[in-house]
Image (cartoon, rainbow, N blue to C red; front, side, top):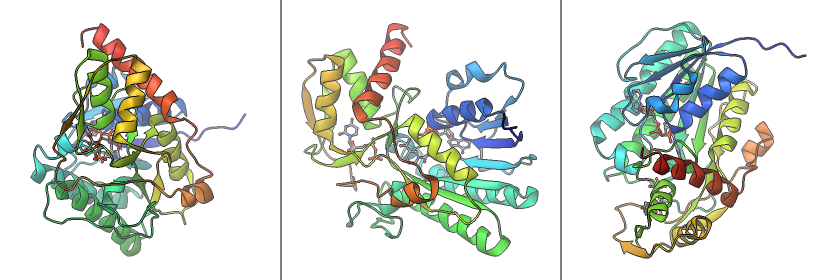
Length: 319
Ligand code: NAD
Ligand code: UDP
């Protein structure tokens, strides 16, 4: 049997939706996991089942405040991801991305840790090239209501590459496209959780704009597999590398699929389109296939079924 070399791994934002699955997978692979979170959007419920594991440790800490720990690898996920949450305190959002990256990179440099940044398809803004390859520099409004997130993440990427060039730090930058699944916060505000909660409760499905804008939805398990493969990849693979599911759907198609899978008769209502809402988005995953031998395995309907089951259980338990 292949022996696992136990690594000490820091996951910032580890109590969030994606972070909690990552902590779980790393423990499963035999590593020692330090989960750091300030619980802005993360929840103890996401990691409660890990608390008895002697190789899991929880640290309440804001990533914008310097911290000192001894680790071998760092996954930097700390940052609210839902537009509703990142626009709630936009100055704090930029600080989380930029000061957070500075603190994480400073730590990685001191302890010579390998470090992965959870970047985003938002670095492409409202893209004029479709689908989006990593070579595309993007079309981002620097002064709009989404800029705190988009520009914060872009600056974090800059810092990662400057630390790599200046200090030879081993970095991995992943650009995540819309990812969904169980453990999303029911009031998260993102489209998949909104539509499922609305459909299950018989409330109107809120379509922003004409509903013809597109997104590509990746199931969380597929994404976490991509994270782990990227961290394990050759040091020459720095990214940025897109991870996402190339299946592309309009918001109306998503709503109709969710109505069908939940057997709901909720009506569709149209609301104003938020400012700077990207019109289309689909990842070009050629690089992920080439370097990580990765591509998503879970189709939208199968992933939605699992997610619907999760929210249904939450609602039945009155949570
Ligand atoms: P999430 O909101 O569930 O998780 C973010 C976590 O970071 C939460 O636990 C939150 O409490 C924590 N956090 C926020 N600010 C912090 C701070 N200052 N200090 C410490 N912890 C802090 O969102 P998610 O979907 O799990 O996203 C995780 C990461 O992936 C984020 O960096 C996000 O930008 C990135 N991402 C996610 C998606 C997606 O579709 N899920 C897409 C692109 C990028
Ligand atoms: N959206 C919607 N209804 C909702 C929530 C979102 O129509 O209740 C739309 C939103 O305008 C966007 C898309 O769904 O076009 C994806 O939004 P989300 O907030 O999930 O993520 P984004 O990709 O915009 O960051």
